[in-house]
Image (cartoon, rainbow, N blue to C red; front, side, top):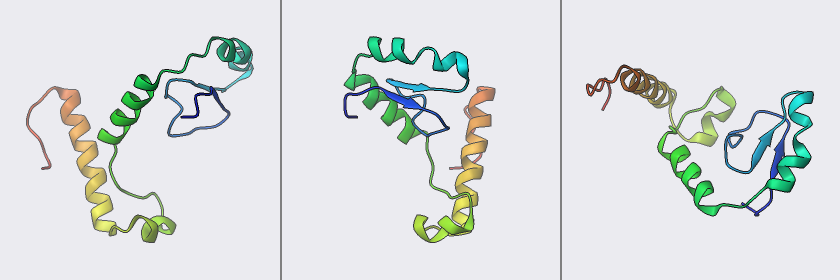
Length: 101
């Protein structure tokens, strides 16, 4: 977002975003300078990634410590996860029939 390439050494929600290089081993580490030298900022690709991320995300939490921060009940969280999983299965199978509305 600051028009600079990003080098990531761990798993992040933005690791597939254009302009991000995730280092997973010594081989990928060897590509850092080439990645930086060839980096070109593309605002359109970044916003397209963010829109796709938003459109494919759902509100839930992974552990009780986030329950209050997310401001949703455990039932809502489970329902949101179930809906996302079932819709993904449905999309994968190519069916137009939705399990959850």
